[in-house]
Amino acid sequence: MGQIPIERGAGDPRALERAVAALRAGHAIEGTTDFVRFPKRPRISISFLTPAAGQPRPDEDPAELAARLLGEIRALAPPVAAGRGIGT
Image (tube, rainbow, N blue to C red; front, side, top):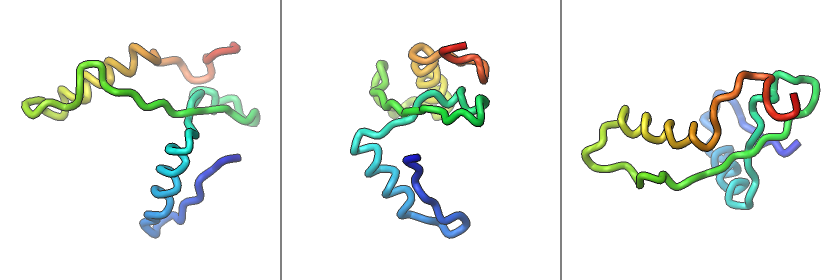
């Protein structure tokens, strides 16, 4: 299923290393709103983007940065009610 094993409660740094390696190999997550369709196996992927307005600015506080980035993400992938994704 392409899962990355995690040793819970042990501060498993190898899990993060495996996740980074998987992403560098081109693996991704998408379709997370389909999880409510269990037992159908959802197909998901992750996409990384470069912020259109640039990287964090020295004078930008964390709340401003978060709002700016969330706006850009929502422009690319608007929120969808769970279970109401493509194919419904």
